Length: 224
Image (cartoon, rainbow, N blue to C red; front, side):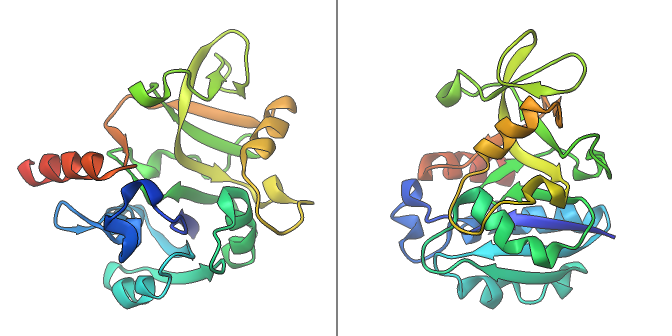
């Protein structure tokens, strides 16, 4: 049984004033909370256990989503405290709930038509990341995808943007102390060891950072 982690603990500062009273993952888009689109897609590929990390207005998540049974899921909540622990600290905080096998991890504040069932059950290295063409607001990209499927900070290949969708082995975080930290240094360490794989995805993908981007997606989903 595959497990999944959804990052939902951010403050949503660029989405204000919408996030003053509602966490960004619970904002409605296309007629349902943004995070619900992810839950439905995970349930469709037979993921039955989902951990959602929370911080800002954390009590609203169980009030809105419950235990996940309406989607055939079991949802557990990993509260980070009043200050989010960033991506690395949040993943480590949730690790004890995710079990010993590789798990899917994704950000709640994206939307895409990527099929989560296409993710490898067992990444070749420590993690496997979905990369997308660089959007206008991040033209320089994040990492280089090499022909052998490995990611690097430079070298021959195409520089792409991390789409905030991936599969991780628990060992990716082994030895790191709890606390507030980003995943970037761990990606860099894994790349240096040839242990970070990736793939390019050219389908629809959006990062929802502000009210205008949310409204644009809402219009698109309602039209379709």
